[in-house]
Length: 72
Image 1 (cartoon, rainbow, N blue to C red):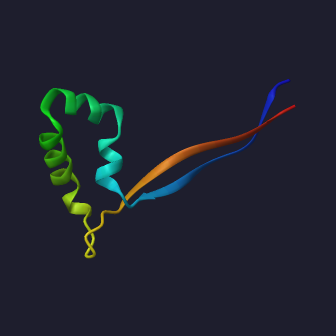
Image 2 (cartoon, rainbow, N blue to C red):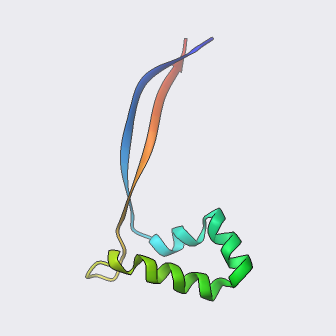
């Protein structure tokens, strides 16, 4: 069987829980191991401050690339 690509596209993904999501990444885990949770949390919070909304949440737009395929 060979895969047959049906569609390729992008999907915008808003991230409402920015800090929690960013702290759960592999690079954040390495930074936490090196500098500690408090320092990494403070650094990320400062870097996403421009994306803070009036209700206190953060809105970051990410683009996920997708491929839909079937086996033929």
